[in-house]
Picture 1 (cartoon, rainbow, N blue to C red):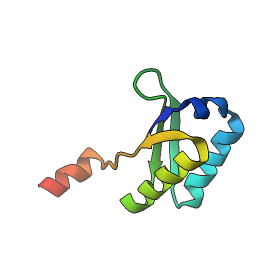
Picture 2: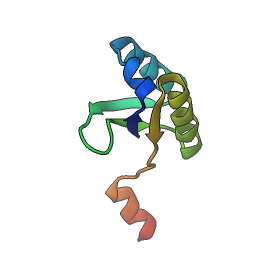
Picture 3: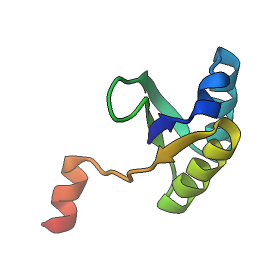
Length: 87
């Protein structure tokens, strides 16, 4: 998941909000593997695991509502899984 701060989101940056976001992901059945702050076109990168695309999309929207950070969600598979799918 890649996130972009809005002006309103910048006002609410805190460690507490990060904990709330992590809790929301876990409550939605996801697992946070890593979180990164970025410079450039996006401000945040979350590496998360969800059971399926629907759970990832619902959580992306819920995170935006909670944080005012706009998230783009990119379902991904490992290259090994991809090779199996197309093989």
